Length: 383
Image (cartoon, rainbow, N blue to C red; front, side, top):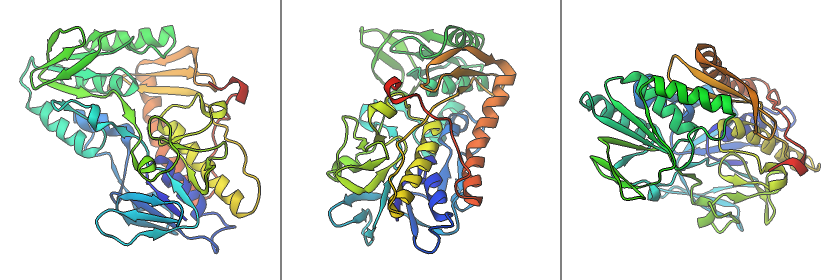
């Protein structure tokens, strides 16, 4: 058993498989990851702002002792011969079953040369160094007002009140939230002195400005690009079936129909719209997908029919700096409900949820099968 990727989905699946009492003597689990640390991507905005020292966690504190860890980057999957090739001239790994859990990333080709990304700890540290060097009154521009962009904006504005922070969005800021949720986000950002620019598309930037599609030039001494997450090219480059974003196509059990010994989990897959049309890229999705993929693999090994995917949501938790947050209640299909929690209490809930992600992974390490999740909407209602 080989797992490519040791993010939220990959580690959850590895622990569920390696710790399974029924499989402990009949399966070996090998995890391939570029580094020996686990990266809490939900903490990167804190690192960038200087609110947190690091988003790295020692992998062996999270990964089951029966799972081997190989430091390297998978360069190609040979699905016909069951090999994973690793960059750097290392010997390829053979597999009987493969789990594709490479996660998501920012599309480097879509990030202007003058902008700072936030896809990994290296990016976060580079941005932190730049922010600390800016003179009072300098303008920081965040491009993209998804949840990541909102969190980055609030974190920097709170940490650096001497800077002018502007959030630029192609559409409405926090438009996916309920009316009260959107109002709470806008009020908090406004209270932090953030200038909010909506319905504006940014075409490019340099060291001192951003250029909009309308031809306007806005001052920007530091531009942060949070728009446009995509999947790595590994599946596409390996000749596996992918969607337009390069995500591995899988069925309702998370198995690849053309290559049934390959399963997928996390941000880098696309399951059928009937069961996954409502899913978004997030750790709240990656953890249950990793667990479900492990369950499907165990069912396959036991010659049982795997269950169809069912993943739902209850909350969206958004940090708005260290002193405030927003908790938006949602239906199973991720559509917002009316009730929201805001302010310091919401910030506490958000912090606890971030801690729980590692607790759920460690819980699976201690007892395979311990992690559970909300069921999704009925297939006919998924969208």
